[in-house]
Length: 439
Image (tube, rainbow, N blue to C red; front, side, top):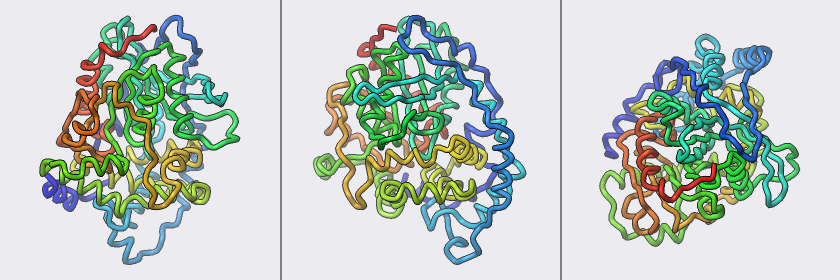
């Protein structure tokens, strides 16, 4: 597996026109799933996102005026798919031209708004912080529908789950949908903000806000799912909030104690290849996280000077962390970067790295992950932190589902939504008896 994947990466030619499951797809209208459950304690407000024309024009102007660094050995020999030096000068120049000539933000905006979107005010009980949370949702009319909370990370957005939501819309009607699917912009990302940013956000409070979102929607029992930052939030929800009855992850970093406990366990050749990719990331691909965690002000101010600067920094991750046998399209990458730019959220989105990587070379802090609530894990071949089956069995007596996929990477819901949805549906079918709701 490792050798075949390496060959695929080595042979990849980055093309702005590469296709995936997110860019330039015909809009599906899912408005029928936008009714709110009756009698809920919160008051969500339907929401439509529209970027003013002046802001779109300003982005185009800034991109057109951006100077790309002069040719040098490193930027001429960079190859982002396998982590060599980052993005190349050629890729960035091609992306600049495509942004100006081909990219249409309005197409993406229309697709965002084809899914029911809402905003809701949330107050965290522990410290009284007031959040204005954005979320997309597919609500079911089935009384026994299982609530599912899907959480993204950086540099992703809630839009990672759009292909999956569209698949659900093709497969079910509001009368037959077995789930209530809640997809928030996680706290301080995108359109989710705090009213008074007078203190630094922590993982604990962010998880509390996500739990309160579900409670305010009337879901006193739910399944939490997450990758990247969402993985840490899901762990906190599982360990600290009774309402979270089961959790599923597609990325998991182990702490030193856990790593030592599984050091002598056998793994398959395929798993060894995936561990090798994760180790390569830890050795040469994780410096960005320490920059986020230790110098968030400087970095965010630099990247917010021009959209093309933000594209170089974020685009590298979308390429390197993807399974580039099925590369993300440049159109999709541009939509993600544009969203961070238009929502002015880059600077506030770095709180998660302050929570996790504020000490260079330090171990990640322990997470309050549950060892009793039903746990599911999906292993995708290109992931920056993986969990072999033998390790999962040894560390988690509550493991009830373990999925293995042949394709997909860090942005699995975006790249391989069919496989991602299949795992989620299988997991939810197993844990449904554990999840009851008063909604």
